[in-house]
Length: 413
Ligand code: LRH
Ligand code: MN
Image 1: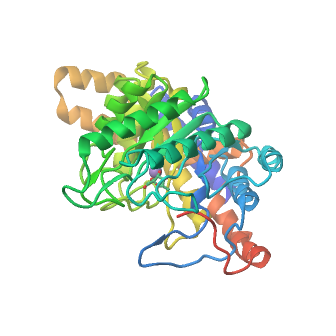
Image 2: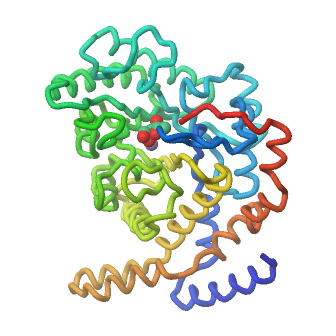
Image 3: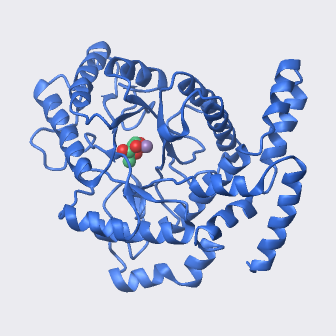
């Protein structure tokens, strides 16, 4: 994209926005300061039970994963952090990893524990972990989470994300109330091991890998447990973890109303937990979610700084880095559009019951092309005008294949 085209489109948009009393520089600053963490497990090709198609040049270890995230940070200026998953990303040399991350200007966001797979631990998690009827397995799972906290403390992380696959595939297989009670007691032991300046992000999911019941299937169950744990335990919203047609923006508003929103795993989906590129299927829903977030913060329901912003996606057919560049762009655009909503006019419509007027206010913001703002925010932060074009023009993937090999496979899903 020629730079002068960008300048022309930006000045046109600035004129449009200042006519509405909006300050372009203020918006650019807000967008520039909004950073989203990248998952360490989404830098290779994802797969399904039907197969995985390697991309080539996938990172072979944590250092190379940090290099990939460092590249994303440098060209997009939309991310400054990685969210690690243990044991997929156990640092072999903590000081080396800390130095590498510091050199790449990357910080460590929430750590993720894993008690949904067997990776050589003594007792299997086949029939559950924190909810398992066997107290020895619950104890093992609690100790794993406490180990993840120790690793995170050394790296400077301030959060632990717990997602449980725990549940059952058939009626009668599990004692649903006991499973909930054992899970709560196990989480209380983990919460007791949480440093005072950490938060626990409790992620819910309605199904998969269990297909009859999941111990923490929805935001309500997660919130009930968090209330029992303490004020630093809050609910993590993974956009793909909802039954079809769920009103996710209402869940976000409700959690902010209770100051119970821990953060997000951004992705998109058509059917189930598809982990598709954020904003690729339901961009209007993503916009409405950000409308609740910016308004909730403005009206002091919950502070913006207390919320964690992370992507959680799996790339079956796209180059992972191109997918993440697109996702970071979509999230930034949804945020930027939500800042354009004329709140006074919307409040007026809501007070007067002007339903048509209210939709006009929202869609005026949604239908505004904010790409010049996001581009300018990136440029002013030293990023590339068009990161995707830069990535392809510089043949980054080809270079990684030459450097790392065609058949390397990154740890993760
Ligand atoms: C579960 C989930 C969870 C991660 C995993 C990689 O579906 O969203 O956040 O641990 O994906
Ligand atoms: Mn997730």
